[in-house]
Image 1 (tube, rainbow, N blue to C red):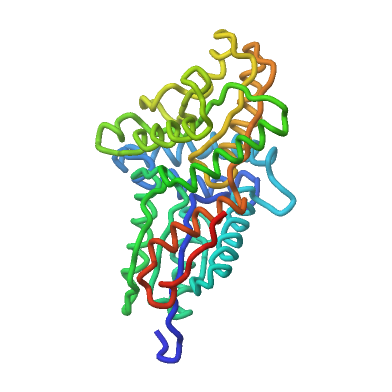
Image 2: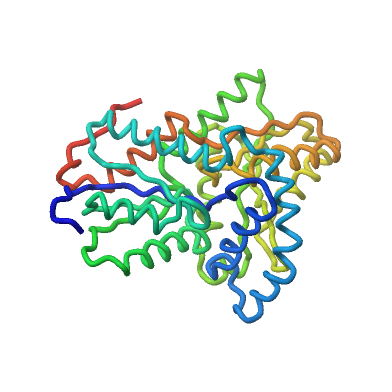
Length: 341
């Protein structure tokens, strides 16, 4: 590190990643990195990698590319666009609190990669680094991958920064409040409430059996959100989406729930995905498009998707408060506080 560089305190936001463009080659490059990570697929490499390269990628990449084209925005990938807006909103909240923390973003499996973003911070003179995985509910398959990649990048550093993580924020009051506000605003704009289905990304049951706390944290988020919205047990339900492979995954499955709700007399549903900080393929295509089709074909009449919190001001403020609490003793930012909302 250059002796002339100034010291810096920084926050690194990390999300999963996205193809650069909605074409088979780009999707294949993204999926190759994503599905080859042992944190994501915990099969022996000698067994999994031949299947990945010989079967999964050739079949999945073109199909996923078609799905990406349905939700691609003029500015680019929804996940990149929404994560960038959230980063800017958090930076704005921190600046309003007179914090000097610099906010950067990175993806695990696509540009800007974790290593490249950390290289930029090293060149800028970072001395204190707070890493915030944008996964409210922690899992070894997501948050664990962030720890792995940050640690791997720092192995090349001579002058190491003070390093901290925010491992999860599934029960944070401000995060729950932002979710509740977004749902309540949606209901008010549509003139009525409907059954609330909270869909979280699934993981294999074997991961939970191995000690992963993800399922427990999802249920805690759902229960707290239902309590803030003053919902009765019959007014809401929880499910898990995005199954992959032949393993047993967490249940109930979202698609199965959407098929069954009309048979229970529930013809109107509001669906929210509290585990996604930013809208992406899994929310905009799998839920807002495919989920709607599944529900209507099963006899449902009204399907409403509540967008992820994305760059909402209350979302950014909630995460900024987490950041400030986690860095309160850093001298440059120790006195920074956000005004109450």
